[in-house]
Length: 112
Length: 111
Image (cartoon, rainbow over all chains, first blue to last red; front, side, top):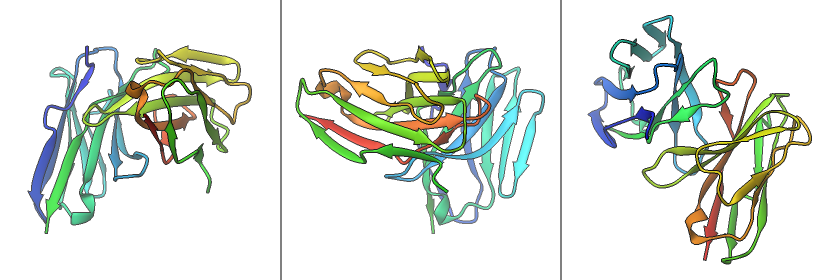
């Protein structure tokens, strides 16, 4: 059973527009959520995170929104740039867990 | 900055062979992890460790073994390699157990 879901395998956005990547989770014990970015032939790199006590966290062009009641989070990238083209993984963990569970990823293409 | 270092980067194995993927980190992190990434399947946790001498199974542990004799090293052993183990393997570490930092990956093909 997939605990972290990213239902859009791919997304294309024009440069300068907003990219919105979505993630859903099923385990109500999760209390910490992360987004990772991965370029081909490289390891994933940490992008931004949010604790369940918050509903929004912002870092430059990247903002993560958390809706606990819907068990949903989203990553907004504004404005999108061609260098943002990568696979984005949503991940979740819990204080009672010692591990981080990843979603299947969404491949973002930003078109110049 | 070394961070998490994995070796080898690429390897081709024959069915039934064994090998060890090496992983070392220089951040003094207690938590270490091994993930595998199959196309379109995201990252699946194989094994993890919360400190030296302590290891536990993740989501897909079958066919693998690990050990954690030091804080720095977390090798992953593949016994009797099978084509289903063709994948990209990522080692990672964490100080807190939530934000984790990955190595560059090891591409393994079993033929």
